[in-house]
Image 1 (cartoon, rainbow, N blue to C red):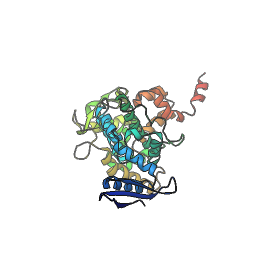
Image 2: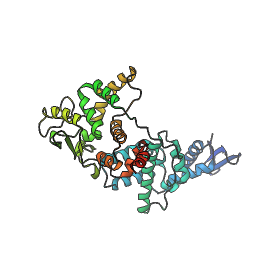
Image 3: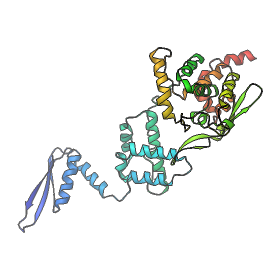
Image 4: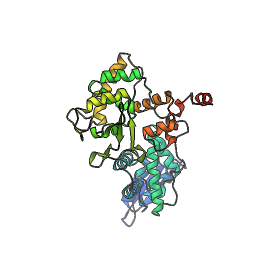
Length: 364
């Protein structure tokens, strides 16, 4: 460990000698200064950097640098960021505070190189997807800094998880019997489950539906107009436009589901939201999961009635799988689900159409 030795000169003044065994040269080394404060700083930096004067000197240089820290850059980037949902911006801020702020965020940008970014990136103990998202925030902030002439290059470029590690959670595709078991188990929200599985709606679209959004498509079928969705905003959850322009759509319900929905809709006012908490307020996903979905799924799993634990969103995946199994073309499924691009539908569900080539051949 480095230590300080006070030396009294013949003229009565005092010098301060910092003594340590340098790990780079393997020799006892010293540094003398007239400032006790500077000597104490060097001692502390040496002890913090494994008795390496090279590293300690680099730390001193970084401390004296006038360049902004990574945290300052990210704060500026987020402050200038426009054109995104407030909830998305809060997600960026949360990733910054949780994974950047206390680590690479404290470094001056002048001293952040690719090696530093790699070391930081590898230290994040989260899923590959989360790491990718956090890295994107840092990289975007560096791009902003380059535009602001604070940096000349982006040291985060090219840093990523190894290929093959980005494995998303596999979707659970339910049979009609599985869905019916969940409907029966979940009780008062059984029809809500049937609507999610039978129409492929996103959760926040379904929970924003009013009676007026359901129309008579023909003598036997109801259709539902999707034009709203709940949003997590800076002022709390509010109803706004759905996810994308393609999400604005009309979805026709089956005859069976139409009949059940007609009965329920007779108990709702024209502008009333159809599916709510018992007190009539927004059926938040956290509430529904905790008090309805999770207890029902746990019981079904414990009794062996089902063998996989689906997420609520898997009801949307399930809807797509039923359509594919029925031979519905992917472009039709794309429009029904409200995907902005057919490539999204193909990427997510294309592997389920295993007999598509056979059907194509039989059609010739």
